[in-house]
Length: 209
Image (cartoon, rainbow, N blue to C red; front, side):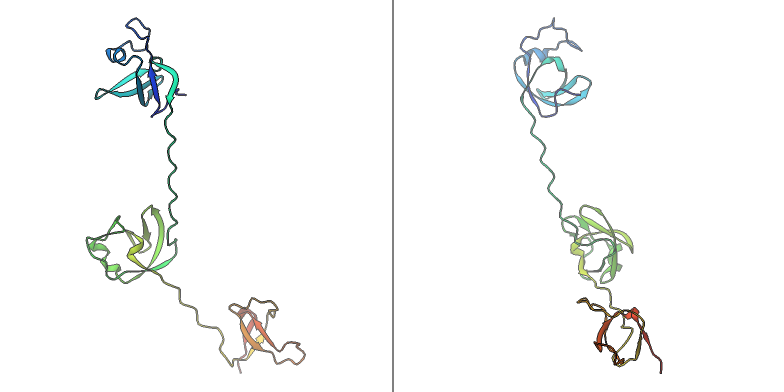
């Protein structure tokens, strides 16, 4: 494992001479910087580091420096958390009909003439492979959030039954508070304690007169 890392500030040994036994030998630049502080530019290969001095890059062995790091390299700042994308795969969105050919949207994505056929159309988000954009099922182009008006809600299916239909109970009466998507029915059977109940559509069968 390398003793130093990129950005470490280290001191060059002040006892270096032409007779010092060093891998690769003693150089004039080493003599010029005896006792001086230098910054490690990176680890090149086993036991050697590059340092940037006098407009050049020098490759010096580990033994040129004192073991102590004068100033450790600062820890890299963590990447800021990227906001979650507004749309997810499978979402239906409508493309704006006022997109301009040659204009860059969100400072990142270029709208080109080949994309014009999608103006005003409903498209499906395929995936979000880019930090700054989407792909859609209907084409290979890259899109940004401001190129869409927004989500398009799926149309609600027509109800299976309508008011006044006579139905036969084939399922369980709902006794709980959750009645979303259920039908309010009036039960003809006088033996029922609660003649008005909520029943799921799969628990009903239309009676044909």
